[in-house]
Length: 323
Image (cartoon, rainbow, N blue to C red; front, side, top):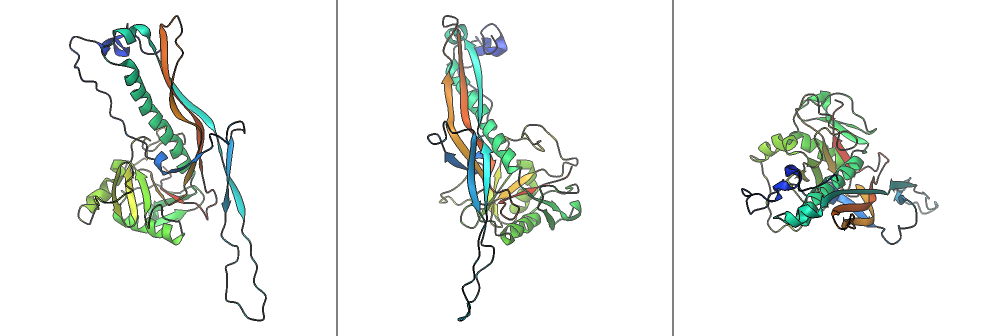
């Protein structure tokens, strides 16, 4: 059987050893970063038996703005448009089979360890799915000329031209925040946006913040996973679930050619929707081979979709590069 067995040391035999410490150790894994910013729609009741597509309506502003009325003129009339967002519900999961012999001879609780490893796997799965939808944004920014220390150019078609050849700085932070405000992108919470990136992508900014200001408000009641600080109405969050320079699947690595920086997402409210039909859960395999073959899996039925697909309504801005 493929999975955890007693006969192979690296697959289970090490679960008991004369030299083995009594303390269980496992690779350290982060919690979800991207998924925590998705709006969850529980369709576990109304979604079953109704196909694999979940839709929502997006309403525009009025087409003609209100104006001053003249007493003898009729009231102006306008309208608004409606577009539909959509996402496809899919299955997700992974499993680890193990033998009854391993379970019986192991010094440590095999089921508990497998559940922990599978939980870490699920965390990365959800963030990669959410990242894939964040990455559908049409709004992209790049420093002017690829290396401007303070000015950025905004693209609205989902593609940038030119290579980003400079580290992200507090001057870029100001320019991007200003651009988001002037597009009337609503804040995520209070008056603040959020930004997600790898720690090294934020290193230059963090070094600068040490000499400017960085908050550590102990009484604040909304601190997201891995939130590190706030600057210019943007709260920064570090993540490592999705690799640097990832491809469209959130796994394939396509690094930026110069290594000066890497992707970062800035966003306000109403970014990505998650439709949950069956929330993630651990499932035990019904033992086979007279109880000798066991297994544990995590399972999920749902999907993610970017909410706004018209450039005028998009809430996500990506710090990007063409190469």
